[in-house]
Every structure is written in structure tokens, then in C-alpha cells.
Image 1 (cartoon, rainbow, N blue to C red):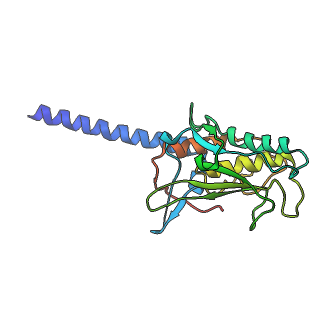
Image 2: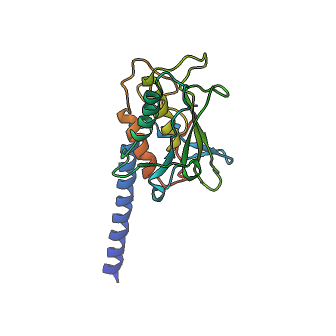
Image 3: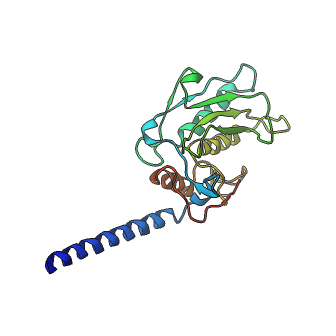
Length: 224
């Protein structure tokens, strides 16, 4: 009986050590991320992580061609927007996330809509969510793209790419903004930033998709 109790005690201690090791590993993996800035607020004064379910991959994207004459080079703008979508492919791991382009907006998880001008205080592009934080349901109603600044001037195709890459980060669940100007998820376009995703952008999306949907985040804060 004593030997059996000792065996159970050893197993319990081993389980506690394994849990502690897993928690320590998770904290280490999330250290160089801005995960606490990309949470959704719930009515009980807490912040949680929301994202697509992995079984929903590939995410279906409707990206029509811009209306004729909307831009000087329609193809270049369209390709910049498409690249802003696809450059998130496999960031978490093989096939996560990945995307399939569909012909009908009604078939899309993420419809892209061309807009003549900004409606509100956004410019170039904007992601609109369709979520229910109480049921932990995540969705995107559309991404609006003007490819123009608020003064009506056409954005450079590199800026279109950067802004679309940023909005796709939102569309994947990275609400809020990174506090680091080197990251694509920083709140503003930085002229001297290296193009594409930073290592921290990638690490943050990986951390988001490794956490269960609805996870609470200690020390979460807003950076919108």
C-alpha cells in the first residue's frame, strides 16, 4: 500500500512538473510577441483571443478586379492586394493559414470590396469584423480597399501591399496593433520599415493559433 501511494505521488509530481514545463515553454515562445495587444474585450472586463478555427482552412477570399479606370495601373494594385493576402500563408505552420480565391462574394470567408473613397477615418484599406465575443465566434464581414490616401492621392503599390498585409493580420485575428514600429501590425505606415512580415509578426500569429479560442491573456492591453 505504501509503495502504491509513493508511486501515485511520483506520478502526480511528474504531472505537475510537466504542466509547469509546458507553461514555461509557452511563456518563452510568447516572450517576443505582442500577443497581449491583440485581444478582444468581453463585457466582463476581460480580454480574450479570437481567431479562425483550423478546420476552416483554407480561408476563402473573394478578390475581384478593381473597377475599370479606378487606378492608373489596375493590375499592379490588384497584385499588391493579392500579395498582402497570400504572404501570410503557412506562417503558423504548413497549411496554416492558407487561402483559396473564390469567384462569388457570397462564398467567401473574407470578401474584398473596392471603395471609391474612405468612409470614416481609415484610408487605403480597412478590415471590418463580424464577431460575437460572448460565443467566441470570429469572422470578417469584408476588407474595404480604396488604395488611396484621405486626400484622394493614389497610394504607392508598396504602401498598398503593406496596408493590405496589415489588414489581413487583423482578418486573421490580430486585432489591435503592435507597439513596435518595425512590425507590419504597427498602427501606421513606416517609410523606412523593412517590407513584409517581421519575425515578431510571425511569432505573434503562431502564438495566437497555438492558444485555444477564447483564451484569456494576462496583462492584456489595448493598442488601437
